[in-house]
Every structure is written in C-alpha cells, then in structure tokens.
Length: 157
View 1 (cartoon, helix red, strand yellow):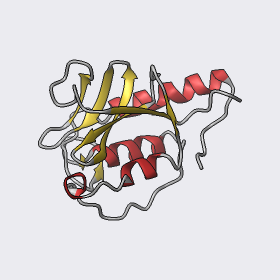
View 2 (cartoon, rainbow, N blue to C red; view 1 turned 30 degrees about the horizontal axis):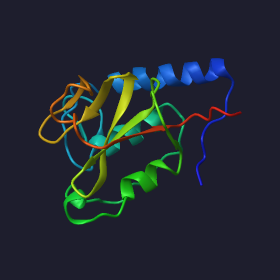
View 3 (cartoon, rainbow, N blue to C red; view 1 turned 135 degrees about the vertical axis):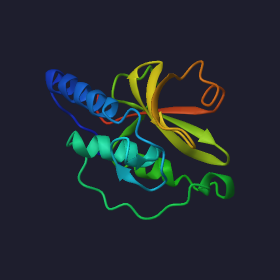
C-alpha cells in the first residue's frame, strides 16, 4: 500500500522544487554508510541522502533507520530498498520529474537510488565518492543497470 501525496499542481511544483534544492545542498557530502549528516564533515549513503532530503522537505515523517549492511545486494534478493520506498511512493513508468527517484539494481536486488534533478541529471551518493550530480544515461556507474522510477506525488487526484 502506497501513501503518495495528492496535492494541487502548484503545491506539487513547490514541493518538487524544495526536494531538488535540498538535495543539491548535500552535494560534496562524503559517502559514509549509515550516516545522516550533511556537509563536508558529515556523511550520507544513497539511502540516508534520500531519507534526509524527503524528511527535510516535510514529505515523510522522521524515520528511525535500523542498521543495514552495505553488502545486502550481494547476498540477498530481498527487495528491502524497494519495500521502504514503496511506503511513501509509487512506481511510475517515466519519464521521471524533478524530485522523483531513480532506483537501480546492483547485484541481486534494487539497492541504489538517486534523486532526479531534471532527467537525466540525478544526484546521489556512491561508494567511495561523495554526493554528486551526474547524467544517469552516460555515467559509467549507473548506465546499463536495471532501473525503476518512483514518485512521491499522485497523478490521479
């Protein structure tokens, strides 16, 4: 069961812009698994980046995140990442709009996500890197991986 946001178009536009603005504030934050601190002395991973941004945008309630292994996708097919995302969003067929999520399959399951800035530009945290913007269609880390899109906004209101 998904709990998408059904809001007037003007409010949706404002919310999407807020998500993008907040996501861009994380640019340059180091990649640190299970961390939730913005800025050059902080750290986030791809999951905590998304949770932090949507919490700060006040689109999801504050989350208590359990510890999770960064190696889950190498040993399990259980779609825990997708299960978490589907609590507040719905899968869309694309093209994604600003503020939507691009979720990638790495290993055995979907276990990496990026926030859409303006497709194909996304922002994400990646292992041994930092939070950065990239072109999802040409980036060698993302290109070729199975991809699904999710939105926090409901289209059929």
